[in-house]
Image (cartoon, rainbow, N blue to C red; front, side, top):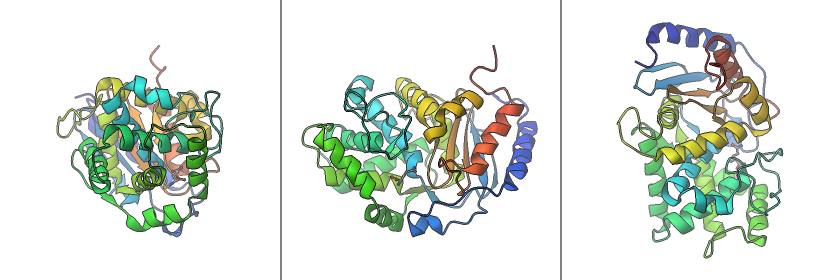
Length: 319
Ligand code: GLN
């Protein structure tokens, strides 16, 4: 086993869980009512090692929408299907140093990276227009959801239609980003922007539990092979690229500090989730809706910091 004394390890996870549970800081996202209604108290951690050992504690079976945690997944599919050269003709690899939804492009008039809204919207146009152009709308949705499901080893993954409809209704900034990029001819030819915006909202509105997301995280930790099914879902080159950008750009405007303090690839979303990948060891998912001013889950962030204070998982711990 990659974690020889798994029981002892999970005792520590349990300690961290209780420690973070008493953290009552943060505010639940309120830009749509479906997120605003989420309880402040929800808190769950799920762990899945690359050899399939699992542990979870707290609210690990309550579905929430993936929101920005879908960004590394759509980026992974694009890389896997098109290769890095093609994808990065359209989107950069640089932290933006700006808000995740800021109306800004890089010096080459491309979105800075695939982990912010502009870059993720662009990746959605690549999937729709270059990867699966021959499919109709329903087939494109199924294709993507099935990919997510394979990453999750077939565990529960759903779609929240009211979140989707709400996202679309309150998406002025995302539409602005979409049109801004069209003005700068960022998209592949034949892109239907409105359909791609819908597709972006659909990806944000995919729904999963902590347990499901820990398996997805573990598939990334395992170089693209799902530890539960042994299926090779992504090429290791694609996973390498995804983890690189999660490391530098995954935590909004806290990404640099997170890379410094925790030193692990991660991605957070506005519904309060954090995908935390310990390459070649395990995937972790932490979920709690209250967010700090930068948009990261307060309990989730505290958990990541507690974890590397006790275990030497930081990229540069073993020098
Ligand atoms: N649906 C949200 C948006 O596009 C997702 C952003 C996020 O999770 N930070 O604004």
